[in-house]
Each structure stands twice: as C-alpha cells, then as structure tokens.
Length: 415
Length: 164
Image 1 (cartoon, each protein chain N blue to C red):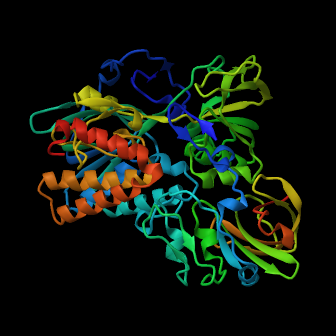
Image 2: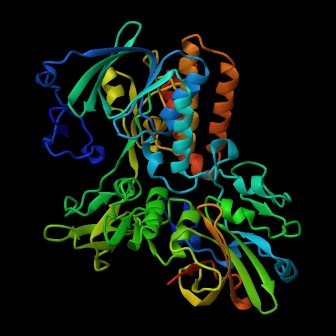
C-alpha cells in the first residue's frame, strides 16, 4: 500500500494517524520526490546495516558489535524494536544457550538492553527501506523515516548489509475472505498481545501448525472463545504439546477439514467448514455452518525478499523455505558480495534458529571487514547449533531447504 | 491406518486429535506414585531440553537435544521444578495419597486460583471430570504451578482445571 505518497508500506503494522492518505498499490511503487522537495536527502555512512530488528536482526547487530565493528545501523519499519518477538508471550523451546523456557517478549527486552549497551549500534525505527542498489565497494539503501513533521528521506551508504526482513503471512482464497473479521493469525496476535485489542468474541482458526495452535491458545488467554481449529492435512502440523494445551481447554482440532466460505453482510457472521478427502477436495454434504465473528488464518509464511530481488540477488523457489529466497552460502552471504541474509527471509523457520543465523551473519559480515577475532570459532559454534536444531523430525523442512540452497550455490561446490 | 499416496503412513491418534492416551506414555508404578513423580507428556522429538537442565537430581535425561526426555521414576523426587519450566507445559507431577491424587499442573489463565477454592477438573480433552480442590499455588513465574486434589482414579486423566 502507499501511505502519504510512500510506496511499499505495510499498513497492517503502521499506526493510523488522522491525516493518513492510503492507496492500494498493484505494482512496484514509485517514490514521488514532491514529498521531499524542500528537504535534503540525509546521508548516513556506516559499516554494517541490518534491515529488520527481529530476533535475527538484533542478534546480527549484537554479534557484529561484539566483534568490534565501529558503526552498525539497525533499521526497522515498526515503531518498536523486536520484530515478532514483542507479541510472542509463549515460552520458547530449545536449550539454555538459546534462552529456552524464556518467553519471546522477555527475549526482546533482553536483546534490546544488550543493544543499548553497545555504543556502536544505532537504531532507526519507523524507517522503511524502500530501495537498494549495489555500488562497487558499498551498498546504497534508500530509506524513509516517518516523523511527526513529515517524512525524511535517507541514503544509507553501507559497506555490508544484512537483510533480516522476516516474512509475510499467507492468505487463502475463498468466498468472503475480504470481509472484516478475516485476519491473519499473526495480525490477531499483534492486536491482542501488542495493542491489547480483543479481535473478536468467537474465532475459528484455520491451520494447526505451531502458529495456529499458539495463537488459538493465546486467544483463550485473552478470554476469546475459540470454536475449533481446522486443518486441511490429515495430521496436526505443529508440536503435539501445543495441540495438547488447546485440547485440554476443550478446543477441538478437526484435521482433514478446511474453510469453504465465510458469510456475512458487512462483516464475518459465520464460516462454513468442510471435510476434505486425501486429495484435499471437499467432500459433498460434509459442510458445517459455524456462527462466529472472526476467522483467523494460519497457513504459513512467505519469506520477504523484495529488497534482495530488487538488488539483483540470485533467488530460487524452494517450497521448504516457504517460497522464493536468496541463494546464500553457509555463512549467510548471498550471491552479491557483502550482502547477507538471516532469519525467516532466508527460509521459514523458528525464532531460535533465526537468532543463530543472525549471529552467524553478524560474525561473517564483521569478519569480512577485518574484525575477525575468534570468527572461525564463533562461526562453527553457530553452524553446530543450527545442525542440532535441524536434526530432529521437525527440523526436516529447514534441513531440506538448506540442503537445496547448498546445491544452488555453485552446485554444492564451495558451499 | 491411513493410506496416503504410494507409501503407507500410519497416523497416530494424537497426531490427528492432539490427545494422548495412556499407551503413549511410560507410567510409574503404584509405589512410585506414592512418593510423587513427574509425568512427562512430551512424546515428539523436538529440540528442547530445559527440563534436563533444571532437574536437581538428574532424573531426566537426553543424549541429543532432539531426543524425547526420559525420566527415571526412582530418582525423581517430585520436586515440581520441571512443571513450571517446560515450554510445552507438558509436565505434571502426580502423587497418590490414600484414595486421593495430588496433581500438579501448569496454569496460564486468569484469575489465578486460590488455595482452598474448588475448580472443575478437566481431562486431556477438556471434559469435566468432577471437582478439584486447589491445594497449592506457586506464582513464581508467569506459568502458575497449581496442585489440585482429585479422586485417585483420575490420577492419569486430570490434566487441567477450569476456575469458574
């Protein structure tokens, strides 16, 4: 969407102000220079720019700062730092080193405190990187910072760039999916856990992956009635322990079921769910009408790679990654020298692995600038931790994803 | 059993409905239940090990972070520390005293129950299984650890409460 002449704005995460002018955008946006006519572009020179301040971005900045890189800039389009961690009220899995047993919201606070302690990390919030291009030795990012008195355009000239842009929620196509009351599960989680807004009174959740299960549980905690979770696959995709939490609160999970349509005049008044066969086709006369005011969709995420694409990074479609991702080596560097990726934008995974990938990208970028103290040791520690996380049955998808990426990288040579 | 595509895929009931049956678990003996032990209802290989780290008597073991936690009921003292730390809220401590069972469970809802109150005992399906008397409430973390008293027969069934 275009907001106040700024293209490519994610309105779902932009605070609404009185005089906002919002347009739908159906193509690559154009940045009008009219808006900035009376203002000069401000230039920023920095060693490393990290785009995105979620778990991967924060860890990348911290890791580079620890290595002694003199100036690191952390840019995020949200008005708070922390990415999706700020709404994750559940405890994380993992081991002690990866802060297992700690809630996402508390990890965000811990990491922010750490970032504040590093004088070499500066952060810019409410700043959207709208374009980037690579120079000979440096990379140039065009960013817009939203200010009360108008917007400021920045040109960030950076020796290395780490993209930790995260991902976007997938939508489903069905009649009525544009009615108010149809939400992405992540959006609902933000409403509840960040802004304290109850999204509805009665919810039907689509998708029994970890996101669907966790958000359903958090809806119950917010005193919202969750009628059921429907899942098109024949089995629950998320962890059993998350499903069990919901079940013992009395929420049923219907596998081999999906949403057929949503009905309602001006807003969601109910949903029709249907049983599907093993080819995912609706079975006639199995429809069930469920009155509700909210339908929540949790059917996976797509990596955000638009900036990388614009920069000309080599990309590849990898289903296990959740879509197109930039081809990268085992140290998170893309085919563009000096451009790194980490977290969900390098393949959909978990916050725990995003943090490790972020650390790895931070250490790699720092090392390439000559700040390579203990770099080998740190890199192998990260790689080992990633292998550990991906070695179980639930790590199969990211494992295959990274194997495919390795094959894309010089056909597996020099990976 | 369900046939999917070319291969034969057996889908366990809990993978379809999210509910464990006692056959999915290794249960303690009556003797062990008398002293009180942790029942770990974590049956999938997920990368997670805080229960191993917090156990003061090393009764929970795991060779690799992806292993399913194994508990030695003889070593376990029923200290309940693992109940509050488990990110999956999948550990319960069960102690049988005469004809009553004391069940310690993680609880993350408001209002926080008070000692002496009567709640509704719920099973793994969220179905009411009678009344549960609140015996102990530990609020140290954001996961409240509650001990309730129910009939001995329900020791392996009650896993949640509803505070009305």
